[in-house]
Amino acid sequence: MTTRSQALRYKYGITDEQYREMLREQDGRCAVCRQRPPSGGAHQNRVLQVDHHHATGEVRGLLCNKCNMAAGFLDDDADRAFALGNYLTEPYSSSRLDSDEIDPYEMVPWR
Image (cartoon, rainbow, N blue to C red; front, side):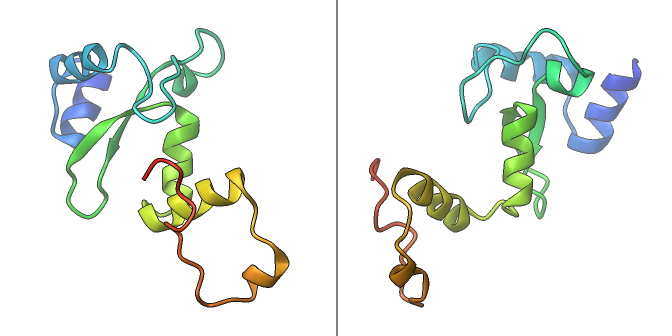
């Protein structure tokens, strides 16, 4: 068993074959941005990383380094992620920033 196989088993409870199956199901692309990892650069950027729910340990999918880090920085908070998506599509005016009534789902174009 390789070090990588041991890490997958220990950290996420999955086998190398399960990782490869997820990779096939996702067509070798990040589950969020749908980009393929680059072929050069640091190892962590060349492979898709296992994303898991930190409270339950449930494996959700494979993410590129950027999307995995973004999810972590957002504390896996879907409301915060939607709010950021809304902000990036149509930034809040300064008057709205002072409001306690901002609904993170208000401007989601895909809902």
